[in-house]
Length: 144
Image (cartoon, rainbow, N blue to C red; front, top):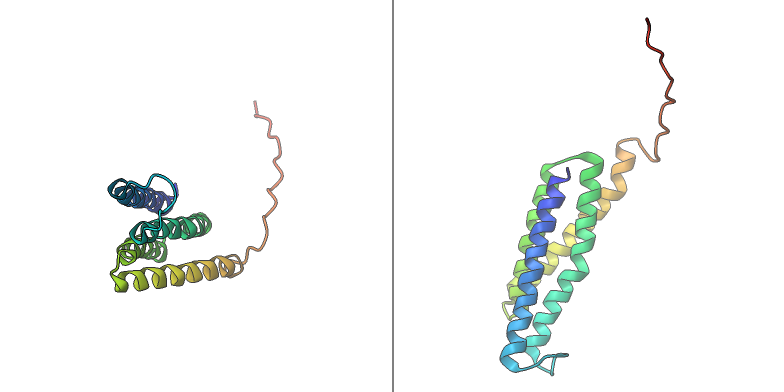
């Protein structure tokens, strides 16, 4: 089981619901059903939601593949937790809390770079650069 990936994907799903709810709050309050109506608060929340959608798949895919290739590790737990926190900070930052926005995107980009680099290096580090052929199976007859 890819435990780190599963927990992170679950947390990301909850963040996606939360971000969608925040967009909906502004839509209801301002009576904007389609588009952004030029409302800067709505635009900012929509961008927070879409920014999440732009980065979360890459991070989740990298966590899953690294976890599958190597198993659970402290690095992946830290990266996953940092990503979840960064995306929450970014959402609050898009509401005007600039340190949250800057920290959120900086941590996200740093994690994406670290995970991407680790994914590129990992196969060569372990000495496996291609799939290993399966050993031939020989039939064994039971002895009487």
